[in-house]
Image (cartoon, rainbow, N blue to C red; front, side, top):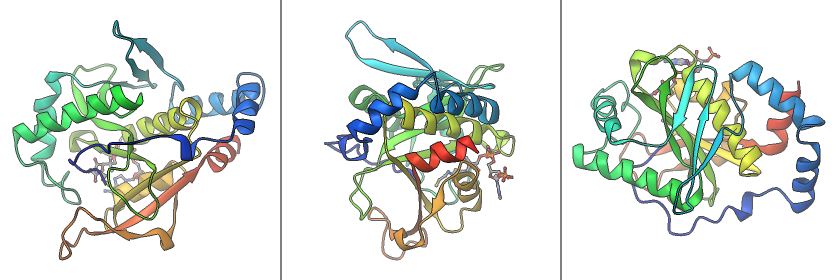
Length: 248
Ligand SMILES: CC(C)(COP(=O)(O)OP(=O)(O)OC[C@H]1O[C@@H](n2cnc3c(N)ncnc32)[C@H](O)[C@@H]1OP(=O)(O)O)[C@@H](O)C(=O)NCCC(=O)NCCS
């Protein structure tokens, strides 16, 4: 799903923004009606604090930090290099992914995430448990960094150290990321992709309400023709479906 490659030059969010009309009704509803309930339910089910806290730096850059019931979703620190390197070296983690080549590539990757935040106001957050310091992985929203039949698009991505698998942390972070994308960024669609055999990731996509679009499956343009991971399944979640699912 996630690539170590460059961030795209242009990443206007416009094509996925909900229409002005919908935006107005969203704003109207927010806190009073439909979306008020959505916020409540998301908090209950996923432990998500939708919206998080906005921080303005002195130079006016908008950065984002958010908390869920058990997690801090935060921007990257230099101390994250070591835990990310450990994750990157674990064959269980990179079984279905492109491994970053070395320590230098990890630093470049972290800097790319910082740049993405600066440029677009969103990105992949480092994840930290509220009760233990140190990153346990990452999750967030990024512009798909290649051209495909479904791009331009914003994708949700995740990676956790295996010590923390199977405890619902990825679900908790992903629910918060979706809420941020749909509510704060006003996206009208979020996509995800994975190698077909990546059951954990696909299960997570389904768990957070995404649907497989079998006709959308594609060959990853950054992977070699003979790479068994080249074929990717495509999942989507539309804003209106997200809202409806939360209301059920
Ligand atoms: C994908 C990943 C982030 C899931 O993290 P996690 O914290 O274990 O996920 P959760 O505990 O929130 O579980 C989410 C769902 O996936 C299921 N799941 C998790 N691991 C699974 C596995 N190995 N096989 C089958 N289902 C699995 C869970 O049971 C849960 O579904 P359920 O609630 O219906 O039972 C983690 O496995 C990971 O980091 N994998 C390596 C990196 C990777 O492949 N990233 C995605 C690239 S496309």
